[in-house]
Image (cartoon, rainbow, N blue to C red):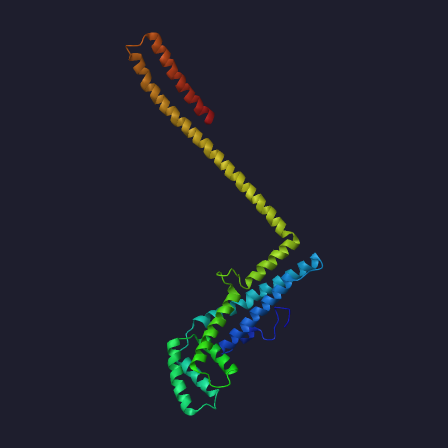
Length: 284
């Protein structure tokens, strides 16, 4: 196995026109594993110098990005196709006939019964086309004798698990907190940023962003406090003014108060009104 993820003697893209989707999916999983091993190698190895680390990681990221642009879209499309496209009745009957043909020493009567029952089983099981092809591929490569229906069922289940495993390696599994193949790129980028000092610069930039954000919030709080104080002062001045306008005439008409007392109370009212007015000026 090469340590270069951009070259491979069985490149998946070269197999696009192949009719055997099962073989493609097998190649795809091998390719994904190869890329994962390559990225693990460059992210977990020891580097003698920082320059070597930077050069190796940068080269690995460039190759990985090339993979993302060329191979991954095809792999993702074919995998989705394989997991969702149902096998037609013609697919099922054709596969049954092919399976029987791969075991020519089986008794003719046994073949007839087996074909009937296996066809009925597949109609009920409703596998996808790729699942059926993967199961057939496994059965003809591992069984020495015509497999029983239970073995076919097991092969179909294993085929489905194989495709799900491939999908998990490709996209990750949130249930177990894995990121899939792209997680290797994130880690490699983190290591490269750390080696070049970019991580520290990003951290310092984030600290500065947070500091500016805090200062902005403080300014906003102060502005709101000033606006509230001004609004409260204006509201109090209006209330005090209305109170003064209502109170002073009443004091002037109060027959039970002597002139000196009236003047004293009116002066107190005017003092309160002046306090409220000055508060508005201060908070303006």
